[in-house]
Every structure is written in structure tokens, then in C-alpha cells.
Length: 93
Image (cartoon, rainbow, N blue to C red; front, top):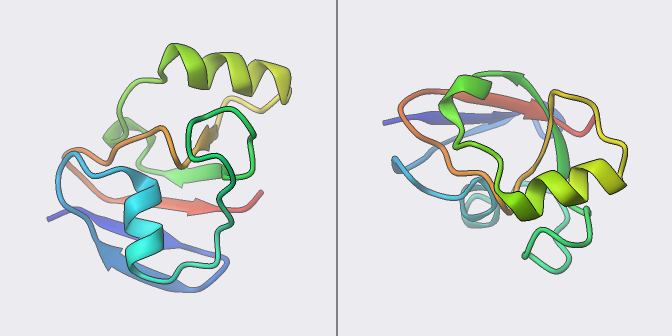
């Protein structure tokens, strides 16, 4: 079972394969804020510190929002990416 690690909270949680990062955060009371939950607002922008290869590819919507936000390559929207096949560590910056 993949493990999700949130550096800002110094917390970890197990994730089901294919589970949205947002769902893991909400189910385990991570302090990451969420707004629209549809990949439009950018509230849940996170920096993937390790395990990016264990997240699904960016959706068209996520790519568009990340471009508008001028996000860095290692940044993702937690409401749009799913954990698959391994551990992921992320932070707020």
C-alpha cells in the first residue's frame, strides 16, 4: 500500500492505489487547503519532493491551471493527481 507523506504536517498516511491525493489529505486531516476541488482555483498546489513517478499524468485541466499559476515542474494540484504504485512525499512549497 502506498504511503503519502506531508512534510508541512510531519504526517504520513496509507493510500489506496488510484486514490486522489486530495482524498488522502482529507481523510487524514492534513492541513492542506482545498477550494473548488476541480483543478481550477490552484488552492491545493503542492510541491512533490519525491515519488512524482507514483502519481498519474497531469490532466488537461491541471496543465492549464498550472500554466496560469506559473507553477514549477515539481508542483501539482492535489485535487487532480492520483497515487499509484508507490510512496509520495510532498510539501507546500
